[in-house]
Image (cartoon, rainbow, N blue to C red; front, top):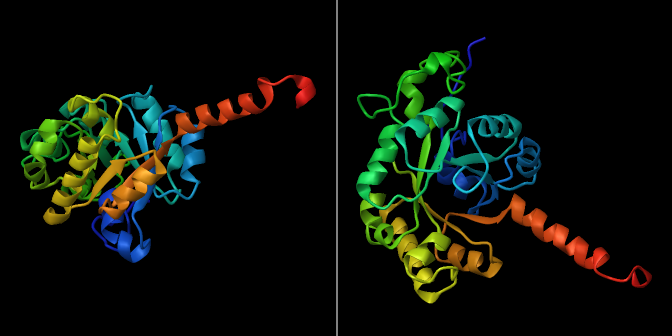
Amino acid sequence: MPLRVKPGNPDDANTFRDALRSQNGKAGRPLTGMWVCSGSPLVAELCAGSGLDWLLIDAEHSPNGLESILAQLQAVNGYPVQALVRPPVNDTVLIKQYLDLGVQNLLIPMVNSAAEAEAAVAATRYPPQGVRGVGSALARASRWNRVPDYLARASETVSVTVQIESTAAVEAVEEILAVDGVDAIFLGPSDLAASMGVLGQQEHPKVRAAVEHCLTAAKAAGKPAGVNAFNPDTARSYLAAGAAFVLVGADVALLARGSEALANAFATRDPADR
C-alpha cells in the first residue's frame, strides 16, 4: 500500500520545524531534549520513551556512522519524540546520505556565515532549488518510492537547524538567520567558549552574553533558537531569555555519572561499613 505523508500540516509535527511552530499550542513550553551519543539503538529507544520532546543523534563527536544512525532512526520510530541528527561536518555528500537514510531533521555544525548556511540548505533541496542528488528509488527516505510525490515534496519533510558556535558565527548571526530554509539556530557554548579564548568556560560572562545576543537576534528574526546547557540553572536562564528548545543531558553522561555514584556508594567503602 502506498505510504502517505502530510508535510506542512500544522496539526502534525512531521519535522522538528513543525514541532517548534506548534509548541505553544501543543506543549505550552519550550522543547526539551538530550544527546544520544552511545551509538546504541537500544539506548536510543530507551531515551525515546522517556517523555522528552527530542533527541539529538550525534555523529560529530560520537561513534556513529550511517549504519548505526539508520538503526537508531528505526529504533525511535513510532515514539512521540523528534529525532535530530548532527553530521560531523557541513558536507553536501554526507547530507545527501543522511537524507536518503530517512533523516528528516538535521543539525549542521560549525556554520559560520550566511554562505555556509545557504550551502547547508542547498544540500537538502533537489535541483533547481538545491544540489541534492536524486536517488529516491534506492532510499528509505521515500520508502523506496512508496511515498507519492516524494521528489516534489521532499523539502517539506526536512528541517534544517544550523549551529552557531564561533565568534564569526555570532557576528554573522543576523545574516545566517535571514537565509531562506534555515528553520532554527542552535547555540553551542562549548565551542563558542573555545573560539572566544576561554576554553572550558561555558559559563563565562562573555560566552553567556554572546548566547543571549543570538537568542535576541533569533526572536527579532522570527525564528526559534536553542542552546546546549547541562547546568540546570543555566538552562533555565536561557529559557527565560527566549530559548525555544534546549538540550539538558546526554545518554553517555548520565551513564557515566550514574555508574560513578554506584561506585562511590558501594565500591569505595569497607564492606563492613556498607
